[in-house]
Length: 265
Length: 252
Image 1: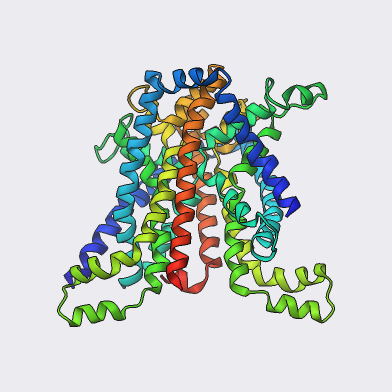
Image 2: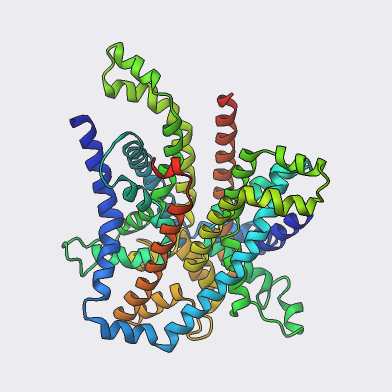
């Protein structure tokens, strides 16, 4: 049927030109000169440290935002507190703010001349140009994901079971662990996956606060740029390949966690 | 309520307040001088123009892709559906590198758009692709097909029934997706940085201009341009929430 095949061809063509061909081609370029240079780039101490630091960022940002995300979602959906609708809007701010502004804002608070910079400096605490500031930047940009995934699930499941548990004498804590959390676990898991993806790949915000000290405050995305700027394309492609590989795994997990109806379109 | 609010305040609100305060450090005149300086103005204009174009292209292609994913049947549809999320999963700097590899100076296709404004648009199209698709898809999925069937039985051609029945129902979802894509495009940096070349007055977007100001030590200048972007983001955020509110009201 012509009416169907034309839109299909346009849609698939657009996706191929924009997504599939470029990403596929980077895989090809990475292994163009064989495996040896890729292995060298992969085991280079700078690259190893960058990957290590990237994983640390994930290990900090994901638990912090997961705990916050679940609490904030509970407040937004379940509590009757005033201002919960304001909280609901404010949570989205990191999605609407440029990562560069996130970086700048942290410099203005924690930098040498910042609001808290001097006080912290006297205590010997440095935030900007250290992994501490990078972690704060990563937490900032990946903050809304868990909230946004858990809120609709909480609305969907309703509070009948929670009330039943309470009538039967469960403490709020017991109700949360035995009733609420099992009900929202897939929403939480999906939010965690999205948070992880963003934390792994953050460039703009981390770049501003890191100072880009090679082997010290360089994450893998920063390493890609640094190697590219040094015309070391093999290393840039290899690091990009590692990040893209992780992205594909993330994509796969996202598909498995999605509700069936959405996954089949 | 307490813990969540404190966390949000410390991580997000206080730092952003610092940006707004810093932007007026040299008074409103200082703010205005930076924002209207030729290089800042060029960067802001380019950012806005490209973001509008990218948002419009997304409106068309995002809706089309969502339509194909919901209404069409073909082998491999599940895989295509999965690929839509790739720009959300792929680090933006990798996106920039991949686009540069295929559409840059060493392009095997002979298409070289590197360091042009087309490259900026291309990078932004890549990272904003999922917004409209993912916003329209569930609405289209829920859409009652009886109305379309009725229209067609009354002699409407598929195109007419799409324009008169499907499109009006999808409009709030399309607009919500477009607003998100626009907001993302205005602030984007990672995907643009390698392929655009960051040439002042030509391919330098606002985010790159801000980085330049930070690196040259002009924090007040960086904050001024940031405040303009923050203001834009605020408008978009309000718009999205109004749309969501409008959508919920008309559900009932």
